Image (tube, rainbow, N blue to C red; front, side):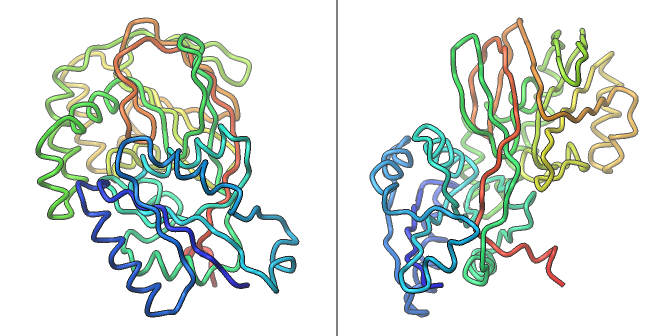
Length: 329
């Protein structure tokens, strides 16, 4: 199959590391004599503008696509940026009601989506996974509808309310994130704000509806609805989550007292936190979460601000064009 790669580049992602990654990828494209067209974002929201401009050029995927494109190019969008950049792209697909495959070269701070699906965080290896793929991989995502502000969209990684969202808000507003990204230590910027967040995050009540049940949690500390195991740049909050399964994982952690949550943190670092009695895990294809008392929220590592939430989640599928080396024999 012949390809025309449309390269959407967010040079600001990863505090500028995406610009360097893009230079590497473009050199590989030139060396391999590939056909490509680059598009650069300059301001927040440009991802959606670019997608809307080129969407009619992009090729849809179906079981017969390979045969249909034998004599003509398959136009594939490749995103170079962070999880937030990819989030904007797939949400514009959703807003325009288009089902299209997309590819991704991670160049952000956390890169949890790449970790979750088995896509290398090394640019050259990720590029090889893209060009060696013969078809896209169906990846489970989830859609949300937020009733209070009448918002809707698509989530690739997770939506968090409470601790992880407070960390995201603090990290994205800090100067240390840019410094650490400079040395490719973006994940460490989340860890720096973790300890402070543990002492400042207060408990809050939530209501959860799933699998025909209504659950009430009075002292919630962390509430994360996730599609991949990771958040915060590689913290495996839900190690059992699998983006290849048509399910959503929900993690709720309650905080009875400070020593208990510190013990949970130690177990989290040791990857033994799922054994903690305050750790609750559920799976469902549909979930509703209501948080009346305003809390920070985050979606795919982007802050949603401090607010109340009434969110409904349901599963969906997004095709990602890459070769999953974990499943190859």
